[in-house]
Figure 1 (cartoon, rainbow over the protein chains, first blue to last red):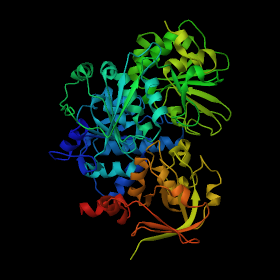
Figure 2: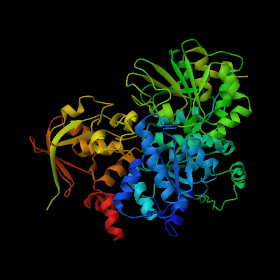
Figure 3: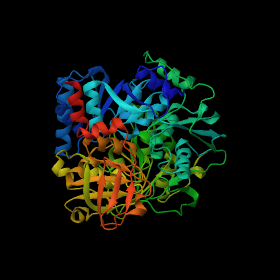
Length: 416
Length: 165
């Protein structure tokens, strides 16, 4: 069995499962973010007074942090009241950050666990060796009531990444290349495992980028076998978990190989994430806004990459650079390392940790005719505001270099 | 008795994502009537005007990709969409639809088989769709039995309510 299958087998009380089996699994983490008052409405309709286990329920206030409208404020208020009345302790309010980053920082995303959050990017938790998947509100309400959900055991495809990652290239470029080559539904209903020598060496933050964007391939879940560095990171939390490993000889439904030795920085052009070209071939497109943040690209290493490029420089006239750390912890580290100062001096605007402009709710949405380059993960029409705006998705280094020049710019010439 | 849905087809292309079905700027809305006012706004601003009394959406591959927002199903359901047939669906949208009782049927080749505006009749029990004018029949993929059970109960809430009684 694959490690993901072993997780599902354990969670469903079976010795063995295989692709296509429909199993009922016990959920370890049920996460709800502030887009989803509907979860509570559906839970009320089910008619049980109490959630199955308040210690396994987690609330995140991240998509509207802090609340930009009376309506979103009222939704948050209702969710806080619910969490209080149910004795739910894991409430990450607006002073926390994006759910996927916050869950990892809290030591609640662990190997072998079933992590189900009302957010499509829940595939991120595969970077910790968990089975992470996104659900909608009513699925989550049923989990709150029963502690269980049904799943079809997915077929699993592998992405083997080989070769030394060149200077100026990051996990974001690798995963954009993969989405560009294989398309947005190659992994529909499937699990994606990233493996190979290059992946083995990747730090946790970069593993999270790969798993995060597996959903842009259509994936149900993603997985990277935790390495020593990931396990050492988890040691600090002193939590119980079971680490699974894939049996030798496991047959993947499909196997893809990517050699990144000569990979160049990549960008997804409007209006789909698989519309990917090397940045150097993107034609110096003028941009009005550059955005560094989100569960895909707002971690410390991302802000560091931007600070290194922009140190002692000034972003182009007529260009805005918005930086939104993925969490308060990331923000504090960015302050301690001096990145915040460097970036503010370069002309950046910092915004409260959260999801913000990634999904066009607030804190930097786009006007018709504007173009934005972003470290987030989606560029559907209207994603960041007007349907007549253009969104370009790239790595933090590319976003920083583009802010510097005011047009889509390959970052390599600005890197030591 | 067979489960039959009859309606007029509105057609859409491949990879219609949840931001197009229901733009992110309306996610704070929670009343289904308000949510219904923005159905498909990101892809077709005249969608609500084009809706007939009974509308069936036909789409290409990967319908509903992107976010996990249940609003994408609520908006279609409360705007009056009776069913969605697509070459394929993104998985969270598919689950959300079943959970809220919106029939979603997978039918490879459907984008070529039916014109926008045609009157069609779906027989969910037999798993076929017929175009009323030509009489031509197209086979739809069978719904897995556990999924059909949820759909037959009218969605996940009635299904769970029945199971915990």
